[in-house]
Image (tube, rainbow, N blue to C red; front, side, top):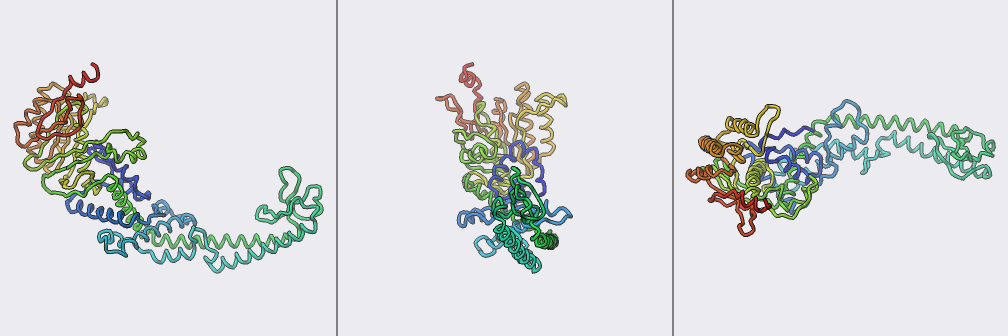
Length: 512
């Protein structure tokens, strides 16, 4: 199984990998989980739209038909990577995976209700001949059939007759020597049939001693009268092993001959499993299908952060071991466009500014990756080339940089890489130094972003930066709402009004 592409720094900062892990829980196979984890933002509008059309069809399929027939689907690559002969359990595992992929193929090919999924399913190799051979060699539970070959059937038939002859011979012998028999039971020691003879009657039944009981009360004797019969049976068992080895090699060769098609079928089926996982997440998170724009238009309506959404609390407990908690997420609504491509968010500490920033970044990344977007109808996302994110401290001891200096180094990288098609998210821009100088630096950065043509969101506590935003029509001021009656933030984003940091209120609230 190929390793997923590494998460970019911007996506890592907004915890995109944790969202992928949350969705991967819904996949039914290791291939599906890996496919979910490999999702990354797509490059073009048509690619994004195609991914969401496929997701919408899978949502309809799930709501109408239920889950796809995925039982047995697994990654065959580790088994097909070597040069050794596949053992029968390994061959059976691959056959089950091929059968699962074929079942998915047939599911969509017999209906015209899901045209895009039908096109994908049609690319799954049929492997009809391999499955036909598998039905001949394997039972429904993966055991080798007796009729796998005429020789195997003949050997097993003769072995059965030989066992019956041995058992009849031994039963008659035990009847004749009942006093010498510990228990009238026929046992097997080293593939040879024996009977338990009492130790004080050892010489009553001439034969070969194979074993003594733990108590010493009996000997397991192979009577002389069945030695040749046992020899015949041992020869038949050896022939059976040789025939099974021949069949094993043949099945392995049949599989290896179409290894490429097997890998392709598993890969496509795994991708459909990933799409189904997205459909299940779509239903659980009450997501919507967004529209996409090639220009600078970002409109998120009632977006919900999937890592704090109460509807996904159970999934987070399963994925990360988190406690479910008792808080409800407050949806975020944000709009940016050509006329107003920048947003400055202010407001109280712990009021949700950073969460709002991450929510926007996450939902854009999820939408561009073909993942469900937990928001309201009417949500529209820009097709950006990258999401540049600066959140949190990055003090570097090795480079002897302060927190502020390290932030500037990261900021410099963003400024060097930003394009007109980028989304830039900057948390606490201009903080960590003199407020006047920090505000001046922050204002110049925002002006640079405006000149570059990208979409920008900034959080700040700097009053001068809020004032700067008021005097530029291209910048929207917003704040996180604060309830004066309870002296607590409501976590609701209010667009058009700058907010107070309320440091004194926060200090009073905690009794400082």
